[in-house]
Length: 114
Image 1 (cartoon, rainbow, N blue to C red):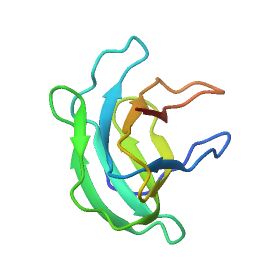
Image 2: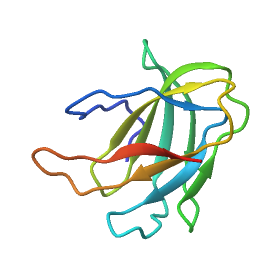
Image 3: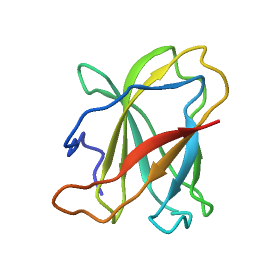
């Protein structure tokens, strides 16, 4: 699996507002998905600035990410997720990645959980 930028979003929503870039990857049944490659790119240039892999419980957490807008890309055997995020002072929220098998009108996506 390469570390290239990918965006298969049908609609570009967001950005999701976070204080820190951390969360969990789950499949459609709510089961944690381990070994998802999480890549963080700059919003405009799509330059990769950090990467990590989810642990056995589907959890991930980046260290100190400067405030600003980014694209979080999640790659695995599922359809890749491309989640627009903004890092700032927004309170403690967790990023939930819903990993979905690719289909005509659906792909993986992200939501927030307080």
